[in-house]
Amino acid sequence: MKKLIAGNWKMNGSLAANEALLTALAAGLGKIPSCEIAVCVPACYLPQVQALKLTHSALGAVEVGAQDISAHASGAYTGEVSADMLKDLGCRYVIVGHSERRQYHAETDALVADKAKSALAAGITPIVCVGETLDEREAGRTEEVVKRQLAAVIHANGHCISEVVVAYEPVWAIGTGKTASPEEAQAVHAVLRAQLKAATDQSARIKILYGGSMNAANAATLLAQPDIDGGLIGGAALKPQDFLKIIAAVPV
Ligand code: PGA
Image 1 (cartoon, helix red, strand yellow):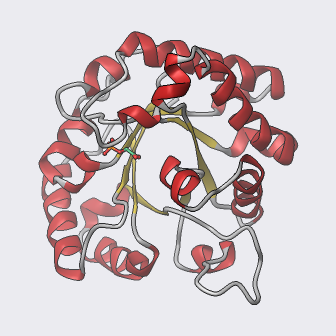
Image 2 (cartoon, rainbow, N blue to C red; image 1 turned 90 degrees about the horizontal axis):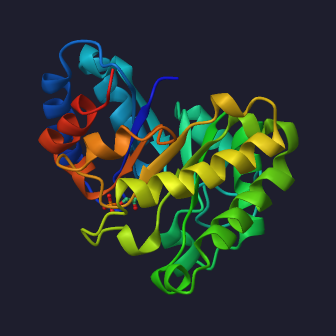
Image 3 (cartoon, rainbow, N blue to C red; image 1 turned 135 degrees about the vertical axis):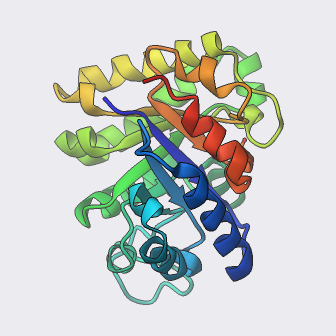
């Protein structure tokens, strides 16, 4: 399966900064990349990013995603963005259950599962994030936590689970410069792979990304692990040269 390198811009950017970033990305992408590429941008910039894709043909290979989605279809949910709205704006992916949403917006496993369901119903691929905190890792609870988080999504989505992308993002590695070692990451990815295999006979098509301080220097060894099918990149996705180096580090 082709690996996926997805940028998570988080709440960063501006009309000017996005244009500069994507123009630099387009200039560096040159030949057809050997992996799939996506950028998950703030929802308000989706139309701008789609317009820039039309301006720069090299961005044709770059899929566009959002960072959150409402679990509701429409109605009195002030501030929320629905699956159909994201679909309207050409979203191919949406991140659900990022640890920052679980932490700062009290998103539960059940809500994350419902958000994944809304995305799938609209034909958008949810990138379902799971990951343990430092306390949970030190207490030896990593496996239990990530399995519980993924189980909720499997339970709510039945056979459609084969359509999701999973991202293992240890909370202690996000934005901290501390990366899980390739062996630590691989061990958790293998657990998630086994869980998906038990849930569907289509598990071979499910990508499991690693996220958490992946950068130009450590990407190659992480991406060489057998169960790491790509990366979800935060900070380094805002620096076009770093993002391009990560793309170039994908083993062919
Ligand atoms: P980071 O973020 O690469 O800046 O650690 C990853 C993420 O939160 O998706």
